[in-house]
Image 1 (spheres, one colour):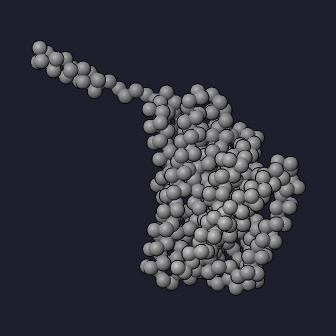
Image 2: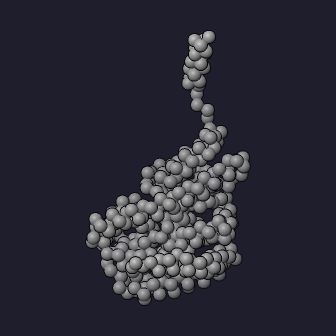
Image 3: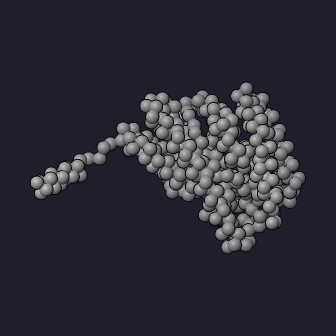
Length: 354
């Protein structure tokens, strides 16, 4: 009898192993802005696709295409809007030319820290405002991961006054680029894979990228010694873009998995960014003592603030929705910063030098 049972079991296993794998019920395509395998930014998308598959028990499969495949780092908005891809991952502020209101949902100069901004997105109405903007383009969005505080950039010369910014060619996207233009600099946007060469050849005089989490790998310290602290991107959020027609056609369980997996992946990416910046800065500061960390002079920061304030006034007059976004961010920052001041800032001040 035991022999018969073993034979039957073996037959069942043999048949099962010869059956084709069950196909996913839902197959989606995703495009992101980064080179294949690019640390943190691109790898988090691969993890997102794997998480969606796991959470759906294999019923949703996502094919991920990097910039190497689709050849357009800044084309994600149009790819998803047109339905060429069902999902995209990129930075919202890359698409200010498509809709200027998209600039507000990555980061803002002199704005919220990463934790403050996450609170605004998920508890203060920020995500609802983002979706109101993107709904006009047939898109739905979800937070996708934060770099945390970004550095003010790599410069090939020391900045001692506002005069040193006149005509300075700098890679700096988003609202920060507009602010720099307001003080005489010449902002430009360049894909990640071209940044080192542009700085090395003098096509640009300075650039901001992220911070130690990614800057060490990029090698900017080899061609520019001055590393300035941040002001323009205190909390840079990436986003997942979903084609609204695709989402509306999915069963509720599937769209819920896609959105919640994006939110969780965003949290994981933020933690990884913070961790890698700590590790890499320790390595950079010890292995490359030529790096000179600088704060921008007080008069430069004051000029940048004035430029920022003037631009916000101009932007607020553009539409009621724009005004609502700017007011929402200002009100939320005013409220939550009071807690940050007596919480995190007080703690850091109290233990400084001890």
